[in-house]
Length: 140
Image (cartoon, rainbow, N blue to C red; front, side):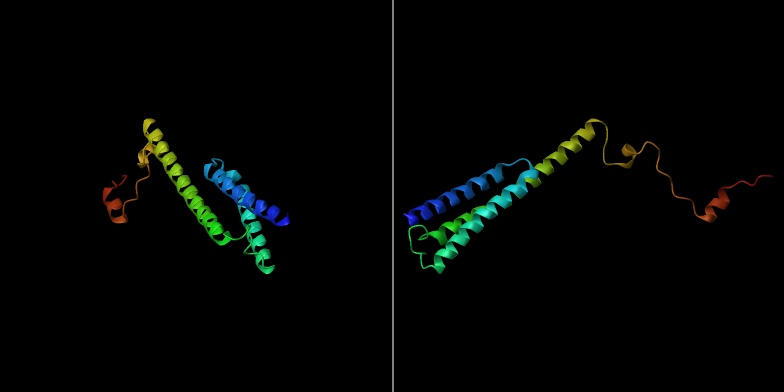
């Protein structure tokens, strides 16, 4: 009976980890990322701890752990893929927002050149001393 309970617990933990990873992938609120990542890592840590306990107690060949290495490697690869995909999705989203911002600026007549952003002309550099003296008419 205890072995069946452990087997069900492991299956539920795998399913929960995959579910939370999917939630992380679909999450649009970056403020929730840390909580989701913490939960994913907690589930994965629990799985590894249970497997290590099973190995120490010579139970790694029981029904709960017979395919653990393969199942855990799939879970780990999926987690890495989700993290990569989320990073790419956020980068593309930020890039898209930047393009929309640039288009919005252009609609309002703002661009990347200096004269659009400054209301007063930019100061001109001072002339060298020799040219300055030749251009000045003496006050007599």
